[in-house]
Length: 72
Image (cartoon, rainbow, N blue to C red; front, top):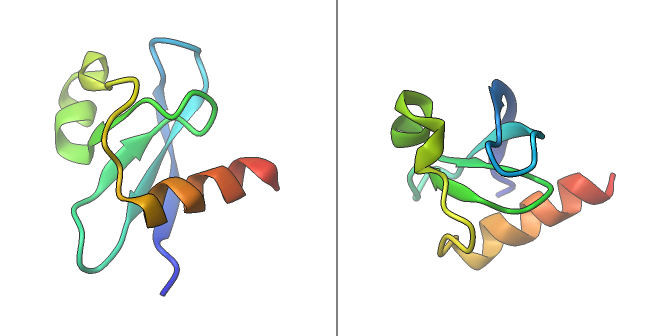
């Protein structure tokens, strides 16, 4: 099953791109920058965008999905 995704109004503090919310039914929601792949738990990032972490340990399926989104 492909993850759910939705563009957010919050921008990445590292590169300025708009973040994307990505969720799968069996995983938590993530806020991810599709350009630099900085990421974090959705609720934490929405409270404080500085909670994004470059190199965040995303599940491989979520990382692959975001890379495919960026390639569109």
